[in-house]
Length: 245
Image (cartoon, rainbow, N blue to C red):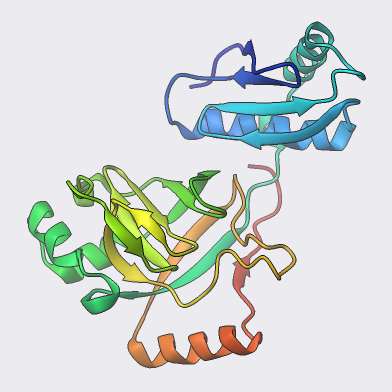
């Protein structure tokens, strides 16, 4: 659950607003509501808000608002917050080719879970995952809500290069690598879509507070989608939820 906020200075132009001690959906809902409220009310001096699992980094202009004044403003916003009025995040559908060269660690995940590869795939693609935060690289998704039966420890020695679009598992979390990068997550699949493209508006497809739904595809559809992406013709599938959370 979330708690009364704690305010911690982060240099002379930012503060951290802590709202909990654990990775939990109720806390994430409060964070999303606060970010929406700050944007809606156009709080003077705030330049940027960066949400995470259980806190928000708030960057502000100290010439407009000092630390104490900013704390007072944010505490007042929190006291008036209607968490359940926040719009429920949209669902980004991510097509995934599981296993084989696309998911070299799928056999290990299945063995660790004591089930078949097909069962792992079915479980992984059976639910919508809350996007708790983005980080590490532009658009890297930290997703919550994975079935704990397929939780798997990270690699003992990280790979030096993981291809963009790789879908992985680390502990009780799953996520997607948006660009080529090092990493230690267990790779179970690959998506042909680009979660991050600096030449696109917006450059990052997923957003904090939204959801990702994995959809299993086969090699023929993977190739077709990859071709559409390369030609700039691919339109991501987004399920609008709207309404209150």
